[in-house]
Length: 156
Ligand SMILES: [Zn+2]
Image (cartoon, rainbow, N blue to C red; front, side, top):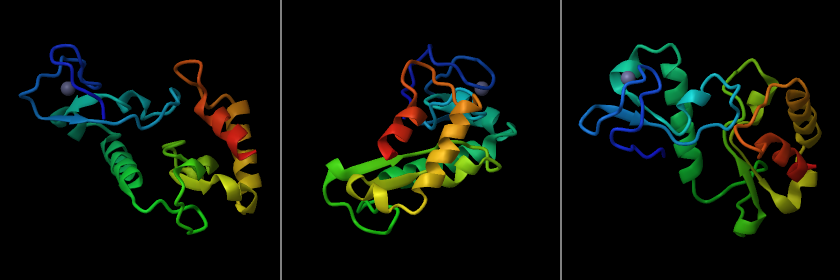
C-alpha cells in the first residue's frame, strides 16, 4: 500500500496535498503499465470525496479489492486448482490490464506452478496475447523493468 507522506503526497485527482486528518483512500501498486488508465492511482492516494466523483472510481475500487483478495488468499492455488506448497514454485501476477475489452484481461491475477507451466492449457494463447500487447506498444514501464516481458520469458 502506498504510504502517505504528510504534506508531500498529492491527491491523484485534485492535486492538493493529502493531510492525515482527511478522509483518504490509499492504493497499492495495482499496475506498472504507465499506459493503463488506472496507472495514476497505482501506489498513490486520493481524497475519498474526489474519488467518489471520478469516472474511474468503480474500476479502481474493484481492482483494489481484487488485489487484496488475490494477495491474501491462502493456500496458494495454481490455475489448475492444485495447491502449491513450495513458495519457489509460485509464479504469480496481478493486474495486467484494467481494460475488459483487451484479451489480456483474461489473464489478470493468475498463479502458475513453475514446474507445471507446460501443462497450462492457456500457455500458448497467453504468450501470443502478451507478445502482441507488447508489440502493439500498449505496455510501457515507468523504469527499465518491463513486467510483461519478464512474465513472457518466465512462461515461455
Ligand atoms: Zn483530492
